[in-house]
Image (cartoon, rainbow, N blue to C red; front, top):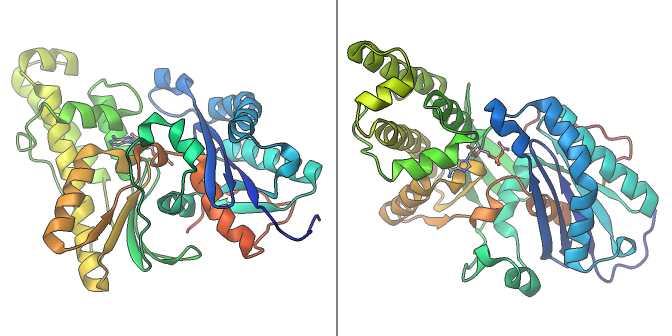
Length: 364
Ligand code: KG4
């Protein structure tokens, strides 16, 4: 293993846990590039098809890594280590990133650093984009990134997870509560599918909610002890609300119902979104109060939701929290966040064996 005196540390990171192939370069703590190839193929199936996802990763990984290195202005021989997402995620998808990372690490004779995908989402709050990256990323123009102080609470909400995590250090995270069934993102996506919206439905519901009345359709909220969440009952409540309206209107499809009830889609979207936000934030409020923590962050794909961002900011004002909301580009799956976690692990000498295999399920 190459272990000369460290002058400059350059980490290439790879993320392939679901349907985004991503590679990023972090040099001396600064994000130099972050390339994401999203897979459109799943749209026509209304959800991620694992086999198609892993095939698309195989096609994307080489150009994505190549582009990330070029944009960063970094040669392969300058890399200090390769960080990769080991899990949780889709096994076939993870295998592509893991195998690629291992092959490159062997070829370059540099260490491999495994990163937990969920930990990565939280570490997105510590990214420091370089001047060059900021200049070439219009979505980050004028955005100031503030890093939370430890300990902080992080509401981690994505397509596969809904958790409240107490973060005391990059490697000391405790799950205070989590979903006992579906994730919040899944509730967004599945309900959107019922309404005939494209996949992924979360961003569509977000957009349509702006034109709807959030009080129009009261939906069921779960009654779960502690800090845990549940979203399966909400999905059923959403479905039954539509079914009952279809019966009342004497129609047999959602499309026909939409013709009969003005603003139906928008009002249902707004009602659903508000219910999900209420469920998420009520438990977060309880955790912040009982843990006496006032630094509060959100992370994961659902943290892109504009209603959730506004509501969290409002809670921050009301309960005197310091709130941390990541820029949009760092909310959904990306390799930059994996690189950030990998960068910390690199300095701790926390490398993984070359025979490491990915895992579909794991905790933080
Ligand atoms: O973190 P992520 O990219 O992938 C994983 O699940 O790991 O999260 C994807 C989820 C999807 O369920 C998607 O619908 C949701 O994030 N999402 C949103 C929004 N943008 C993405 N949900 C609500 N509002 C949004 N604006």
